[in-house]
Length: 88
Image 1 (tube, rainbow, N blue to C red):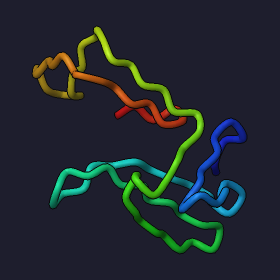
Image 2: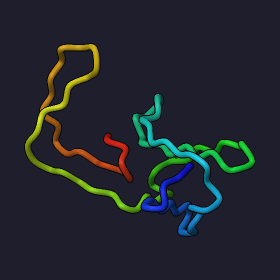
Image 3: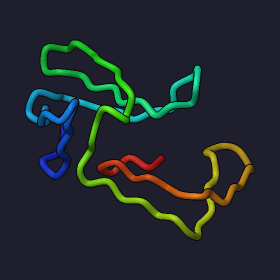
Image 4: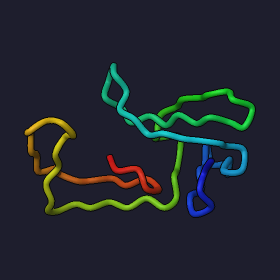
């Protein structure tokens, strides 16, 4: 269930109350960020983040290190996007 603190807009329309769950992920073909929403009916719909807005969104542009769970790779990201509470 979507937390009350997150709003999701698709093509400029507030769809928050129609959505049961959501996820932001990196598309395979062109590495474009995608949003997948699951509606209360159970139907899933994926579209580019360029067509969506998740509020709040926070951008961190400097500092920090990222690690991948189970791996020893450490990276310094150019920027970090936090959608709702989902870190990308």
